[in-house]
Image 1: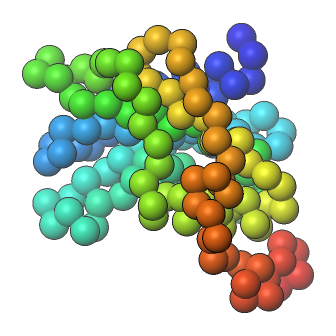
Image 2: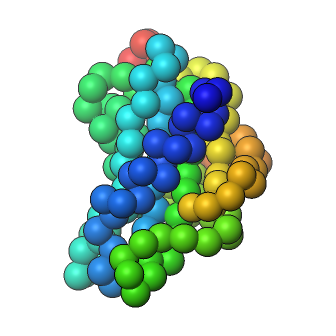
Amino acid sequence: MNATKKLIEAARRALAHAHAPYSRFAVGAAVRLTDGQIVTGCNFENASYGLSLCAETVALAAVNAQGRFTDVEAIAVVGGAIGADGAVSGTAIVTPCGRCRQIMNEAEQMAGRTLAIYCAAPEGDAVVEHRVAELLPHAFGPRDLGITPGKN
C-alpha cells in the first residue's frame, strides 16, 4: 500500500473514535510526519458546541505534544454522517473547516514545506489533493509575525 493510501486508511480508522453525538457527523484525520510516522485524531464534540475540537486540530495538537510540529508532511481528512447503526459511510468528500485550514497553515509555515492535504470519503477510492494556499489563500501566519522554525 502506498504512503497516501496508508494515510487515508488511518484517517478512516480514526472515524470510529469520533465523539459526535450532537452533529452526528464524524471526522477522522491522519498526519504523516517526515519519518513516515502517522498520528491520528477525530472530532470531539461538547454540549456547548464552541468547545468542540476538529479532527485535524486534535491530530496536529498530538503531533505538537510529541515535539514534532515541524515534521508534518501530509494530512488526510475523511468525514461523513453517522448512520442509525453508528457507522459512517458514503462517497461525499469533505474538506477542512476554516479554523482547521488556519491551523494547517501554521503547521505548513512552521514545517517550512508545502503540505499535501488529501480529502477522501469514508468509502470509495476518490481522493482530492489540495495545498494549504489553495484552501486558505492570503493566510496570516507565523511569517507575518517574523517567526520562523527553529529561530524563535
